[in-house]
Amino acid sequence: MSGSVSPLAPKSFAEMPAVRGVRMATAAAGIKYKNRTDVLLMVFDEPAAVAGVFTRSRCPSAPVDFCRRNLAGGVARAVVVNSGNANAFTGRKGRDATELTAQSASAAVGCSPNEVFLASTGVIGEPLDATKFAGVLGDMTSQATDDFWFEAAKAIMTTDTYPKVATRSAVIGGVSVTINGIAKGAGMIAPDMATMLSFVVTDADIAPPALQALLSEGTGPTFNSVTVDSDTSTSDTLMLFATGAAAKDGQVRINDAGDPALEEFRSALNDLLLNLALQVVRDGEGARKMVAVTVEGAETDAAAKRIALSIANSPLVKTAVAGEDANWGRVVMAVGKSGEMADRDRLAIWFGDVRVAVDGERDPAYSEAAASAVMKEDDIAIRVEIGLGSGRATVYTCDLTKEYVEINGDYRS
Image 1 (tube, rainbow, N blue to C red):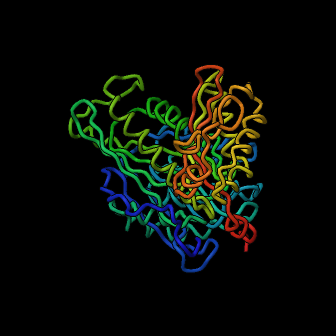
Image 2: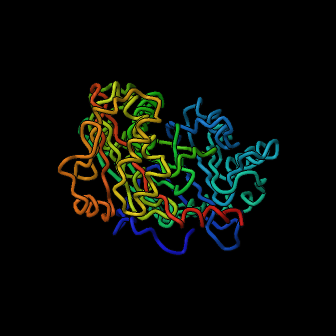
Image 3: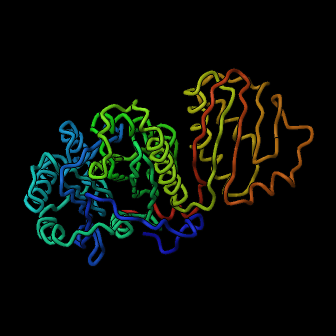
């Protein structure tokens, strides 16, 4: 965890209500550092429905493999998350560590290892000593409490400078339900799901297939539209749990993601996912500015997104933002290299409300002073009109500063 909090951090944190059906506890197991909270346990006293999206990395961590296997069962009773070690690229030792952790958790909670979900974050390539979990999970189960969201968010931080929490409420068939979420992530963020770890819990009663459809659909414009450094983590995990406690209030179980009764819930869930994803970007390692890149007029929405990611991931664009330089030439470069159709002579580019280029050249009314004023803001919008179709997409990123190099130059030490 960095010494200073990101200047883009929220000015205040959400007051996190309890969500019926889930309890949490944290502990210091000494995974990487002594006396640092590094383990989170979530306990579902009644079986919860579960959905998940994971990294598309071809070199996933052992916990990602483990979760994918258990997801087919659709039921969760426990989640164990550790920071300090990603348990990735750890071979047979990694697989053994997940099995041992799951056994420890199932013994502590009183469930099957198939109902346990695991996530690890931290250094890649170092074996994880899973025996360290065995000593703490029993006590954590008995101490777990339902109003522990903020502490839970702290326990999974690595280079994050602040805990990431969000809450929303919605009504399903006249019954009010709550959705809470936590996330971690600051570097190695270019989710391709899902980077980062994020855990979202609701007391709604929703069947696993419907829950999965909601989550898979919700990641596109949220977690899969953010990038800090273009690097997709081996460990990306986003999980959504539904405890079903709202059934006691008369909420009728939802079995189909297309059910009209889900309209308000879907909107609230997507809003929460975007909020968490943007908190991750705003905590980008060394970040001083947040950038929203919108591409319009591309051949398709997918083309627009690829062009937007090309701009958002460009080190030259990101360093120009860090230097408060309205360098539209770098945006043109990023559009041109994206691999998508573009017509140089139709391009128009805006920084904030200032149009800097139009019809393939500098705007005749261009004002350096106006453009420079935009670049001094904490939040900067870059908009590009391609002029070929109706495709549109927005992605979110941050600037690239000297601090990013410093943080990642000695990350393993």
